[in-house]
Amino acid sequence: MKYLNQVLEYFDVSDKYRSYQIQLLIKYVGKNILEVGAGRGKIIETLSLDSSRKFTLLELDNSFYEFLIKNLQSEKIRIMNKNSNSLREKFDTIIYLDVIEHIENDEEELDVALSLLENNGYLIIIVPAFQFLFSDFDKNVGHFRRYNKNFFKEYRKKNNLEIEQLKYFDIIGFFIIFLSKFLKLTNSKKTILGIKIWNFLIPVSKFLDKLILHNLGKSIICVYKKVN
Image (cartoon, rainbow, N blue to C red; front, side, top):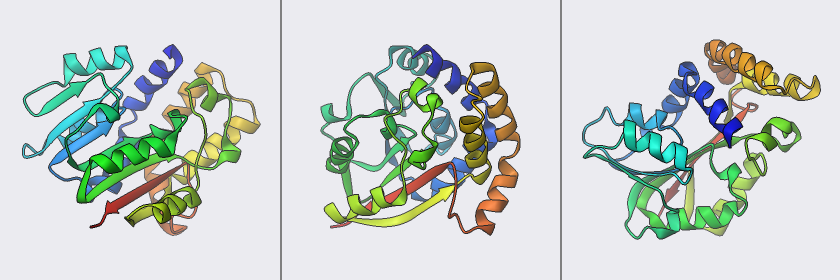
């Protein structure tokens, strides 16, 4: 967990990537938002600039939870050290950003999320892409797996959902991870350097993503709409 905390600190200063994530998901964000596995809360810092929104952040890691309580808790932001299955209220937006790959029973977690989602609400998920990229880095940060589009298409078939958005993104990140895995660049110093280079190149990645029609990338974004 210490290694995960260190890596998240460096991802938190990856401002270009965080901005890219927000651009991809912002149109689906409503007014009553649940984020599961909020980490250090960097996405919520931006989304909360809209004062009409209210947030519930769930975080099981004690160090992240204490950080969120100290830095983000407010009248509009409620922070809880609980699992999603302990909740009973409904939300119009539920967000999992790089979270479900850390959960062994991922579909069970998504089932719980759907039970908490209002009709016509949005479930927003970002996960790492392509199992063949799974590496020691994934193991060190607690990933069980990486994903492809078929997982989300199959899950949609089992549930009353529409797919509003499903695409790969961050092609530069894809090639950095590919090279890191096959050149064995997995120690922490090289990981940190790679994160810094990758963040600097995000504008290039955004341009190339559009050029290749989002058919390849480091990550997948899936947005489900729960229909009546």
